[in-house]
Structures are given as C-alpha cells and as structure tokens.
Image (cartoon, rainbow over all chains, first blue to last red; front, side, top):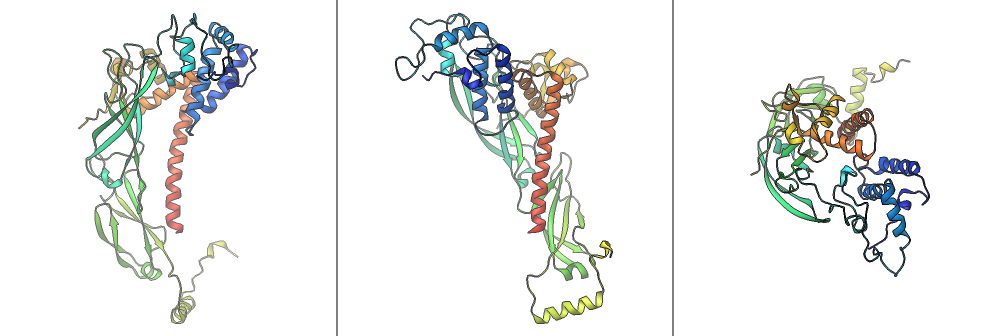
Length: 312
Length: 100
C-alpha cells in the first residue's frame, strides 16, 4: 500500500496551522469538485483532497497521521501500519458528501480501527442514487419507446467497493425533451438492511439530427432554394420526422424566411409542435457562357442594389 | 419493463443520507429547488430535475463549506451555464447548416 502524503496533496507544509489547511482545502475543492469541474480526473483528485482534509482538519486524526508519517519509507516498498496499530480517533462521522464509503485503502487501514465503523453507508438510509445520460433519437420521442438501459452501480461493503452490472428495459414516455430527467424508483444502489434501494435517474439527451434542429417542441429544417425558385415560387418536397411533404414556396421568397408546417414538430404531452421550413437561397456552383449572359441580362434589368442600406 | 415514477415526495427525499426535512426546507427557501406539488411541507413533491439540483446544492454546501446564499448563487450560475452551453451548441449547429 502506498503511503499518502496528505500535506503535499493539499500543497501545505507539515507544520501548517489549521487555517492554512482549511484555505488550501477550499481552494482545491472549488477547483476539482465534480459538481463544478466535469473534466476527467477531477473527481479522483477531489477524492484525494477531501480525504487529506478529513484527516488533517481533525487534531486527533492529524496527530495519529503525523506519528505514522515517521514510518513511511521504512521496510522498503509499500507502507503498512505498525503491528498492533489501532486508531483512537477513528472515523464514523459525516465527511465529504460526495464519496461516502470511498476513501483509499491507506485511509481505511489507519482509521477503520477500534472505534471506527467500517466505511459503509449507515443503516436506515436508502441506497445511493445514480444518474446516467440517455441518448434518444428525435424519431424515438414521437411515440412511447422501449430502451435497454445498461449501467454499473458501485456497492460499498466492509470498506470495499464492488460493482454490480444492471440492465433494464425502460419505457421512455412520449414527448420527452432534452435535459429532462426521468426517475426509475429503486434501481440505484442497494439500501442497507431494510432501507429501500436508491433511484436511477435517466438524463435525456436528444441526439443531434442531420436535418432537423430543435426549438422546444418545434423543429426547424433548412430548405435550400435555387435563386429562380425563390424568385418565381416553387413546389418542393420537404422531409419531416414522419415522411415527406410538399411545400409551396411563394414568389419573391427570401433567405431566412420561415414557413410553418403545423403539427409536424415533436410530440408534446397533448399533441405536436410545429415544423418550420427555413429558406436558404443558394447559388449554382458555376456558370457557362450562356448562363453568364442570362445573369448579365438579369442584372441590367432588375436594377437591384443588395447593399442599398449601407448608404453612400 | 421498469416503471417510471414522476415525482419524488419529501418523505422519500428524507430517506437519502444527509437530507433532512429541515435541510430541504432551507434549500427550497433559497429558491434552489421548488416543489411541483403540495401546499404543506409534508406534502411536497419534487420533479426529478429539482432533486438533481437539490442534491448538488447539499454536496456543495458541505464539501466546499460555503453558506446557502453562495450555494444558491452557484446553482443559479451552473444552471444558466448549462442552458447557455446547450443553446450555444444548438446555434453553432444551425449556423453551420447555413454556411455549408
């Protein structure tokens, strides 16, 4: 087992006073707390920092740790507490909330002695809640969909962490929206004794669609138009989430105009949102001599100045 | 097939380690989470999202040793940040469609 230097983890000197330790902890906790920092590795770093603070903030535990610190590096290789070591300060109280039951072996070997309870969830409380991201395709939100959910739940038992693999079939209700959370009662971590299991929360994430953008319960599809279609009007075929429809483009249409197609958006609890066709006039990639002549004739006849708003 | 339960009652929340009725009333008082139903405290029901932010608030309060007013501000900013990040992703996708 590796000896953990709690002072260097907090970046303080071994003779630091309690105020310095508190300041160092707060600074690092703010930086690495997983609720504040989603980056990979931040959670592990926060656990280390929280564990170091848990020991160094308490005068009794710190004194015991300082005593053991003298034995580090002795006997080569890893660290073992001296034979017969029993902690008198122990550990059974509330620590950092985030990692109940998840301190290192080093910590457990020192502080789960005599009076300390083994690090496990106290009886009477329900098991730990868990949350996982649930990607859903837009098409799947239109009707009730059955999804297979596979996840891993950490279980703390006698100071050890093991994992249970679980898989569930879940009915995703019609009309779920991006960012919504769905509760699956009793599918989280196991409760101690008679206490109920924790819950599993599914965090719904709508998968970006190659054609449609989402605005609440409405959808937006960008419809490219040739300049003459925008000028003369046209009938175009437009995709929707449930099949294609025909759309009439009025003459003199512009880029950025939105045409509302009622009831072709995402499902809501009581109906459907709308689909908006967003017009985008695009130029043909190249022009031959004949086409160039036509553009020239057009430019001479329209007298159109696209930059008239700039003034002179 | 696993059934979905929409609300979380105050009683169920108080079964979570570290959550007490007094603590939940305090968190609600700071506007961090709002019950979706129940006129009296004992009848409060929260939606799943409120539970997420409520639990996050309690963790921040204890782990970072910051008071509730600061926690409420942090939660507000985290929520706003999440919403803006999502909106920004959406706008970037739409801009790309327009420029491509």
